[in-house]
Length: 259
Image (cartoon, rainbow, N blue to C red; front, side):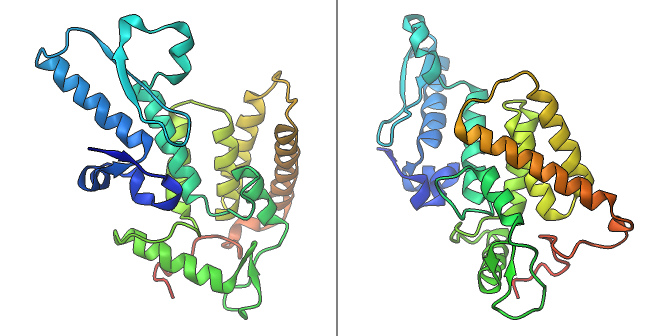
């Protein structure tokens, strides 16, 4: 009785309790539910084989269970393990709550770096001034949305959520899934004003990528952006007294209220 829902149209599709209540959710949540159901059937002796979940990578397919003994090598990319399920969930949440969504055709990292070129906004200034690549009106809406999310009220994810994006990146780094998570996390730290930590993660990313050829045009753009961001952070750290005051462009504010 469960059906698949597009995550982009409804953020609740990524949450287990909502999926169980509405019987509608993302392919990831359905994979988790189906996997647990099959484990329960196996526990009670209703299945006499070890099961696996095949995850659909199209827009409409549903996850399906099958006999592990009959799996083939070509099935490996579609097999959903506990770690791969967690990675997919965190990456989806990271994309949902990423605060910089100016260009949907670009990568999350490039969008975050592109926001630097617009310059920091002035807190308390006129509504025409910008904060990164977001207007003051949009920043007010983003703070309001973040405040509602913290209270457990569903809201539009268009403006992103810095805390949740950081949390997703941190957990992906702990899983040691992809070195690119170090780079993305550094971009968020930059916007939060944590320049020393930003440089540390950028350096870790560059060390992890040594010897790996980059032939994809998008990957080459990202490498150039990494070098640009590294140079910018080094300049900031080189300034005298940079850490004696809170950065004006920091994403965080003392006031957690939306206004």
